[in-house]
Length: 213
Image 1: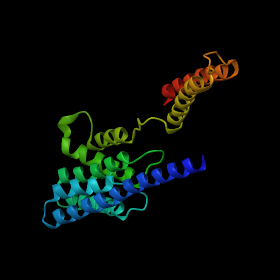
Image 2: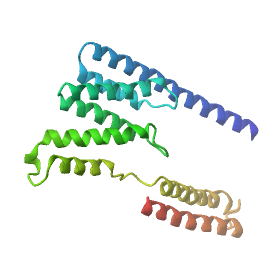
Image 3: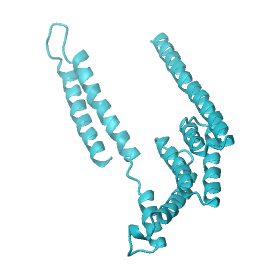
Protein backbone atom coordinates (compact mmCIF):
# COMPACT_ATOMS: atom_id res chain seq x y z
CA UNK A 1 0.00 0.00 0.00
CA UNK A 2 2.78 2.39 0.94
CA UNK A 3 4.56 1.67 -2.32
CA UNK A 4 1.40 2.37 -4.32
CA UNK A 5 0.95 5.70 -2.54
CA UNK A 6 4.55 6.66 -3.31
CA UNK A 7 4.09 5.75 -6.98
CA UNK A 8 0.81 7.67 -7.18
CA UNK A 9 2.39 10.70 -5.50
CA UNK A 10 5.36 10.58 -7.85
CA UNK A 11 3.15 10.38 -10.93
CA UNK A 12 0.99 13.24 -9.63
CA UNK A 13 4.08 15.34 -8.92
CA UNK A 14 5.47 14.71 -12.41
CA UNK A 15 2.16 15.68 -14.04
CA UNK A 16 1.96 18.84 -11.97
CA UNK A 17 5.58 19.64 -12.83
CA UNK A 18 4.84 19.31 -16.55
CA UNK A 19 1.84 21.66 -16.28
CA UNK A 20 3.75 24.26 -14.26
CA UNK A 21 6.77 24.08 -16.57
CA UNK A 22 4.61 24.59 -19.63
CA UNK A 23 2.82 27.54 -18.01
CA UNK A 24 6.14 29.23 -17.21
CA UNK A 25 7.56 28.49 -20.67
CA UNK A 26 4.54 29.45 -22.77
CA UNK A 27 3.68 32.40 -20.55
CA UNK A 28 7.22 33.76 -20.79
CA UNK A 29 7.28 33.23 -24.53
CA UNK A 30 3.94 35.03 -24.95
CA UNK A 31 5.25 37.94 -22.89
CA UNK A 32 8.37 38.18 -25.08
CA UNK A 33 6.28 38.20 -28.24
CA UNK A 34 4.02 40.87 -26.76
CA UNK A 35 6.98 43.11 -25.94
CA UNK A 36 8.39 42.65 -29.44
CA UNK A 37 5.03 43.55 -30.99
CA UNK A 38 4.71 46.63 -28.78
CA UNK A 39 8.22 47.76 -29.70
CA UNK A 40 7.29 47.41 -33.37
CA UNK A 41 4.19 49.54 -32.85
CA UNK A 42 1.86 46.58 -33.44
CA UNK A 43 -0.30 47.32 -30.41
CA UNK A 44 -3.26 45.12 -31.34
CA UNK A 45 -0.96 42.10 -31.54
CA UNK A 46 0.78 43.20 -28.36
CA UNK A 47 -2.51 43.23 -26.45
CA UNK A 48 -3.35 39.79 -27.78
CA UNK A 49 -0.03 38.34 -26.63
CA UNK A 50 -0.11 40.14 -23.27
CA UNK A 51 -3.55 38.68 -22.69
CA UNK A 52 -2.27 35.20 -23.51
CA UNK A 53 0.66 35.64 -21.11
CA UNK A 54 -1.70 36.70 -18.33
CA UNK A 55 -3.79 33.58 -18.85
CA UNK A 56 -0.82 31.24 -18.39
CA UNK A 57 -1.35 31.69 -14.68
CA UNK A 58 0.77 29.97 -12.06
CA UNK A 59 1.02 31.40 -8.53
CA UNK A 60 4.16 33.50 -8.30
CA UNK A 61 4.93 33.45 -12.03
CA UNK A 62 6.49 36.83 -12.93
CA UNK A 63 5.19 36.88 -16.50
CA UNK A 64 1.58 37.12 -15.26
CA UNK A 65 1.91 40.34 -13.25
CA UNK A 66 4.14 41.81 -15.99
CA UNK A 67 1.44 41.08 -18.56
CA UNK A 68 -1.25 42.75 -16.46
CA UNK A 69 0.96 45.79 -15.91
CA UNK A 70 1.57 46.04 -19.64
CA UNK A 71 -2.12 45.72 -20.53
CA UNK A 72 -3.00 48.51 -18.12
CA UNK A 73 -0.15 50.67 -19.44
CA UNK A 74 -1.26 50.18 -23.06
CA UNK A 75 -4.87 50.89 -22.09
CA UNK A 76 -4.06 54.15 -20.32
CA UNK A 77 -1.76 55.31 -23.10
CA UNK A 78 -4.45 54.51 -25.68
CA UNK A 79 -6.93 56.64 -23.73
CA UNK A 80 -4.46 59.50 -23.67
CA UNK A 81 -3.95 59.07 -27.43
CA UNK A 82 -7.71 59.15 -28.02
CA UNK A 83 -7.81 55.55 -29.23
CA UNK A 84 -10.83 54.17 -27.34
CA UNK A 85 -11.05 50.90 -29.26
CA UNK A 86 -7.49 49.91 -28.40
CA UNK A 87 -8.07 51.00 -24.81
CA UNK A 88 -11.22 48.87 -24.66
CA UNK A 89 -9.36 45.87 -26.04
CA UNK A 90 -6.60 46.23 -23.45
CA UNK A 91 -8.94 46.76 -20.49
CA UNK A 92 -11.03 43.80 -21.63
CA UNK A 93 -7.80 41.81 -21.76
CA UNK A 94 -7.32 42.58 -18.07
CA UNK A 95 -10.90 41.74 -17.14
CA UNK A 96 -11.18 38.57 -19.21
CA UNK A 97 -7.83 37.24 -18.02
CA UNK A 98 -8.79 37.68 -14.37
CA UNK A 99 -12.09 35.87 -14.92
CA UNK A 100 -10.49 33.14 -17.06
CA UNK A 101 -8.01 32.17 -14.34
CA UNK A 102 -10.33 32.14 -11.33
CA UNK A 103 -11.14 28.92 -9.52
CA UNK A 104 -11.92 28.70 -5.80
CA UNK A 105 -10.21 32.08 -5.54
CA UNK A 106 -9.66 34.97 -7.97
CA UNK A 107 -6.03 35.81 -8.82
CA UNK A 108 -5.37 39.55 -9.27
CA UNK A 109 -8.92 40.34 -8.19
CA UNK A 110 -7.85 43.88 -7.28
CA UNK A 111 -7.39 44.63 -11.00
CA UNK A 112 -10.95 43.68 -11.91
CA UNK A 113 -12.90 46.64 -10.51
CA UNK A 114 -10.71 49.36 -12.12
CA UNK A 115 -10.91 47.50 -15.44
CA UNK A 116 -14.70 47.32 -15.16
CA UNK A 117 -14.83 51.06 -14.45
CA UNK A 118 -12.76 51.95 -17.51
CA UNK A 119 -14.61 49.53 -19.79
CA UNK A 120 -17.95 51.00 -18.70
CA UNK A 121 -16.73 54.55 -19.30
CA UNK A 122 -15.32 53.72 -22.71
CA UNK A 123 -18.43 51.80 -23.77
CA UNK A 124 -20.66 54.72 -22.85
CA UNK A 125 -18.38 57.04 -24.80
CA UNK A 126 -18.01 54.84 -27.90
CA UNK A 127 -21.66 53.94 -28.34
CA UNK A 128 -22.77 57.58 -28.19
CA UNK A 129 -26.10 59.10 -27.21
CA UNK A 130 -27.91 57.31 -30.03
CA UNK A 131 -27.61 54.02 -28.14
CA UNK A 132 -30.13 55.28 -25.57
CA UNK A 133 -31.26 58.84 -26.22
CA UNK A 134 -33.09 58.98 -22.90
CA UNK A 135 -29.94 58.58 -20.83
CA UNK A 136 -26.90 60.71 -20.19
CA UNK A 137 -23.39 59.37 -20.74
CA UNK A 138 -22.96 58.98 -16.97
CA UNK A 139 -26.17 56.94 -16.76
CA UNK A 140 -25.09 54.72 -19.64
CA UNK A 141 -21.69 54.26 -17.98
CA UNK A 142 -23.35 53.20 -14.72
CA UNK A 143 -25.56 50.74 -16.60
CA UNK A 144 -22.54 49.12 -18.26
CA UNK A 145 -20.66 49.04 -14.96
CA UNK A 146 -23.49 47.26 -13.17
CA UNK A 147 -23.60 44.62 -15.90
CA UNK A 148 -19.85 44.09 -15.68
CA UNK A 149 -19.95 43.81 -11.89
CA UNK A 150 -22.69 41.18 -11.93
CA UNK A 151 -21.25 37.78 -11.06
CA UNK A 152 -23.10 34.86 -12.63
CA UNK A 153 -20.39 32.32 -11.81
CA UNK A 154 -21.47 29.18 -9.93
CA UNK A 155 -21.07 29.22 -6.15
CA UNK A 156 -17.76 27.63 -5.19
CA UNK A 157 -19.24 26.21 -1.98
CA UNK A 158 -22.23 24.57 -3.63
CA UNK A 159 -20.07 23.32 -6.50
CA UNK A 160 -17.89 21.54 -3.94
CA UNK A 161 -21.03 20.16 -2.28
CA UNK A 162 -22.16 18.80 -5.65
CA UNK A 163 -18.79 17.17 -6.23
CA UNK A 164 -18.86 15.65 -2.75
CA UNK A 165 -22.33 14.25 -3.41
CA UNK A 166 -21.25 12.82 -6.75
CA UNK A 167 -18.24 11.18 -5.08
CA UNK A 168 -20.52 9.67 -2.44
CA UNK A 169 -22.93 8.41 -5.07
CA UNK A 170 -20.13 6.88 -7.10
CA UNK A 171 -18.43 5.49 -3.99
CA UNK A 172 -21.64 3.76 -2.94
CA UNK A 173 -21.85 2.06 -6.31
CA UNK A 174 -18.26 0.83 -6.03
CA UNK A 175 -18.88 -0.36 -2.46
CA UNK A 176 -21.83 -2.43 -3.59
CA UNK A 177 -19.94 -3.82 -6.59
CA UNK A 178 -16.94 -4.94 -4.53
CA UNK A 179 -18.43 -5.69 -1.10
CA UNK A 180 -22.17 -5.99 -1.49
CA UNK A 181 -22.12 -9.39 -3.16
CA UNK A 182 -20.16 -12.36 -1.88
CA UNK A 183 -17.99 -14.68 -3.96
CA UNK A 184 -20.88 -17.14 -4.27
CA UNK A 185 -23.21 -14.41 -5.59
CA UNK A 186 -25.13 -13.84 -2.37
CA UNK A 187 -26.11 -10.44 -1.04
CA UNK A 188 -24.04 -9.32 1.93
CA UNK A 189 -26.64 -7.35 3.88
CA UNK A 190 -24.49 -4.88 5.82
CA UNK A 191 -22.24 -3.64 2.98
CA UNK A 192 -25.20 -3.65 0.60
CA UNK A 193 -27.28 -1.53 2.99
CA UNK A 194 -24.36 0.84 3.57
CA UNK A 195 -23.81 1.24 -0.16
CA UNK A 196 -27.53 1.91 -0.67
CA UNK A 197 -27.51 4.65 1.96
CA UNK A 198 -24.33 6.14 0.48
CA UNK A 199 -25.83 6.17 -3.02
CA UNK A 200 -29.08 7.76 -1.80
CA UNK A 201 -27.40 10.41 0.33
CA UNK A 202 -24.84 11.13 -2.38
CA UNK A 203 -27.55 11.56 -4.98
CA UNK A 204 -29.52 13.97 -2.79
CA UNK A 205 -26.42 16.00 -1.91
CA UNK A 206 -25.35 16.09 -5.58
CA UNK A 207 -28.78 17.38 -6.70
CA UNK A 208 -28.85 20.01 -3.95
CA UNK A 209 -25.36 21.18 -4.92
CA UNK A 210 -26.34 21.50 -8.57
CA UNK A 211 -29.56 23.32 -7.69
CA UNK A 212 -27.94 25.97 -5.50
CA UNK A 213 -24.67 26.32 -7.42
